[in-house]
Image 1 (tube, rainbow, N blue to C red):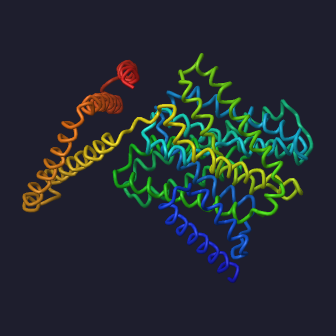
Image 2: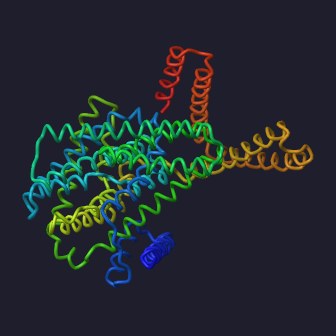
Image 3: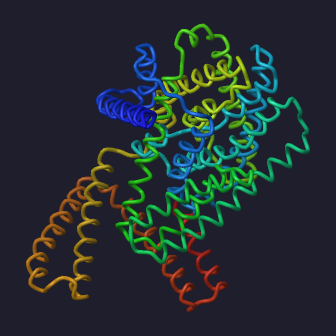
Length: 510
């Protein structure tokens, strides 16, 4: 009982720290994750909080929600369009990063080659949370944001598979190239299949349930259950969660009510926020600041190796992608290179290292902490300047104001149409509707006038509105075709033919 109370007290203390830091950084120009790490260091110096978690608990508790939340919000159509470039960065890119980082560190630090490869694997996963949030604020190309976020999502799974293989080699002292390659394919494919099957099953269940509490619980079972089941069969739990999240986020959402979508998105956003916050706080609590300063040479070498490896991967494979896949502008390669931040996954992996690694375990922790801190303090804080210098910032103040007014108008019209349908179905009395309708109609007219004012003051926005409306119309046509195919009105061949025409037009309009 006392142990339970101690654990509960620790959780409350950590959550309190998370809230206080979040409130403070809202007024400061400091990345939230950096602030959490620094606070963790301060708390360590004060000896006020201690946290001891097993390696298995760290991976099982923190990794699934982070990965699932990211996968849940990835659009499969956007992912499919950019899949060749994403896969190049997420699979061979991770392997090459592991080899480069491990090779450099084995030459310039006391680490043996197998242990250096473990570090190369755990640090190869990118975590662009701060960068993607900045993309949304500044109005950077949606495709560029999808590239950055999707690469991070898929390379998480690849990095953890490579990490486990490298760790097995470091602990056993045996390496067989063919066996390692076979294990990589077996673990990756198995995890993906488990995730696809479970994601599809839960999506079908959600389609038959209309209760947001049950549906939210199903997604929770899916996220953690996919990970645990895949690991039980010695597959990749992370890739299982990725596949489950992608399927459920795209298929499951079709059977959800608007209320359920809002609840599930908010729930997973909150869970991911907690997981991210606790990981960054725990790394600060686990670090020994004097030890970090005394190990400054291997830390600097680790930063150097990671920066060099990222540049080689992005610019090397970028040339290949430019020639043989979707064309990626050179300016985007600069962003992909500098936006390769390291974060939660790398920290979770380094915290999960077994004690069998001995003294190397502590050095790997210090190096990982140094790399993550560098990417957050230096790379994330300079990304805005880089985007502006490259001319990739497209969202102007007047455009933001137009979007704000247009969104209010759209929401008001949707509310009016929804209540009108409810009245027609007999779910709202005529007396209540007669009182509500004039007030809501007047609100719609006010919002419409506000939109007209912006368009009159900024004529160039009207062309953008026409383009947006045209693309919305195309997407509506595609949705109608999906409904016709689902109802058996048109065959699969006709659907493919007509939807391909629409998709081609959409691509030309982007």
